[in-house]
Length: 539
Image (cartoon, rainbow, N blue to C red; front, side, top):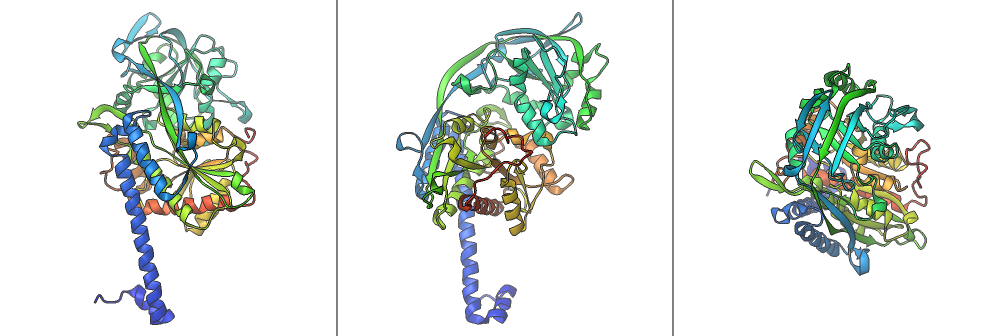
């Protein structure tokens, strides 16, 4: 017989031995349930991110194999299909664009000097968004941060003639704009530039603002891009070119301008004002691309509400299933498993769905949506937001979980979109009840607001939040996050065997999200926008 621990002795003194025994049994049972959930969460990730699924590239056989597993788990939970034809699937049509790097060329000309650029290493051309031009030759103009937000009294393009030019921008943004404001302005940049007559964009990222080393960026450049087959849903017009320049050669484009990349990078890293000025450089490119059509499904499941009226309104819980597929090897490994990005989010959606399905019935209905095409530009979620299986006006909120990174004890949470609607108020209230603290994104220039699927809902007029483990600058958690991005983000080492993942803490975040989902589903009032929201006029 094991000796009694302090917790058991304390309960016996307070409640008597019979009551204490009952409470100990409940405590042990709760631990067993938590262990079972943690184990299932871990098994779901291990299966979804298994090498056999070949990195789950959108539309690939590995993606479809992982989708079949998720469908099996959804059936076990007891959710109803809400996809096409009585299935869980919503097919989404894409066009895949592949750049043949070996048959591309680029030239930077400054005055009379010509600098050949290697496409794929010196110059990375984006294959997403829309069909690329086969040839382009245009002068460059430096437009600072390249942010157009006149409603916030900030406009880097004011007074500039951009017709027939390539706009050169630097990463970051002014301190006068919030992180979400800068992110939203970036999301609208391609459409604004094309309307102003610009033919392309050249991005410069300061060395301090890189999430992953340039060497890894170049490896990812070999992968195909995608855009929605329905041209009406594209933000980027045909023939528009977006590219990024290796920062090690960025000084070349500023020759003769009276400015240097080092000077501008220092300003950008401090979120200071950055000048705009003409350049004596022009860029020409010749591209070889190939295209093919493919289809990949979103997965949609329904948990029907109990209220005669409110069950016709829906709270969406979402994560993405796709990742990067098979790519250039790192350390001999070519499979980009995407265990944390975002098999972990899918596993959490399944865990939360199980808790909500087995608890008291919700008043509103829930849609559990597992997205495709997130890594190709939030394409599956944007298609879903524009082609939902229910009326768009009936979707009251989206709660999205993408790469939460449970790598430390859950004490803080980051809620992307918290200031846009009263969902943030709900999130803060529930956090206080669970002894958690909501903290702002400590790296706002990474534009997370527009890089996860909840942005597709926000821009479609539906209040949304995205959830992550919280951290602050100059803390051990900040360093853990930094090291994980440097070594594992969009790399084969983001696999199910990686160390440091704390499944029990992930379940705590699931519990936090479950309470928020239930509170929204049971509230007589639907969420509403804050007056100052960037999306207040879009619903």
